[in-house]
Image (cartoon, rainbow, N blue to C red):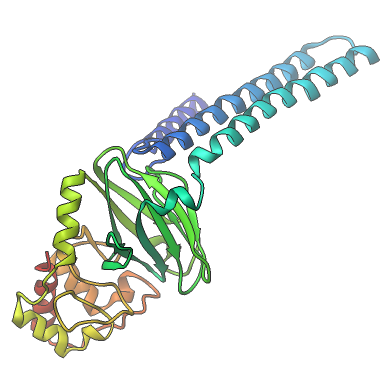
Length: 326
Ligand code: CUA
């Protein structure tokens, strides 16, 4: 009875992870769809092999008399060589045939795609959008917005250690390696908010190196890029003055202001992001204040120093300013 119950619980917990914003088995794009189909095909192939092995074992254990040499070699030939060769060969051929779809080619075809530069850094994601001429239009962080129905080229780089860029609902992962530029093309077919992760251990806050992916209708996406390209962070003059006074601009940039730091995330449009500290906290004024007071309490190993020595009123005022950057 308890064996049966454990099996049910295992099946339920496995099925739980089949849908949601971060499941490769709940695809929102063609690449991820191929990955999901390949996964289920492999599961069926694996189940076939497993069943036949267990079946033969069962059959052998029930047999009363010993096999003669001819019988034994026939069983070995058919069950040990021919059957696995056919099944594994079929699975391998299918996987090789699918591969170009999952990882579309480099070069020519990619040159015409919309390009988003993504840098994996300890422990956050720098995201740069290019304009039509190919020069940098604006920068954001820990949030990737893409238009639905359009194939997008991600150029992946890292200034520090190896990370891995993975949006399970959209497709396969790609390593982000210092000293080289890796390419990955993906397409979202369904609008929605998904979750991306760093899939390569990169330090103490590797597990907190998540990001949000927002797949938007093309019109809404164009409006967003226009708004972001002309973002003005100087509307709240008092908040901005405090931000500059306490030296935040040494590391952070905000469009439309004299804050042009490049060490940390660009904070233009910060208020509209879903989280603080790369998915660690919800983006409320209190969460922002908490992060400013002591970032490494939330994200161990974060480069940002703690600012708990600032007057609490200033921290709250800066947090309100950042929350207002929308
Ligand atoms: Cu970056 Cu793990």
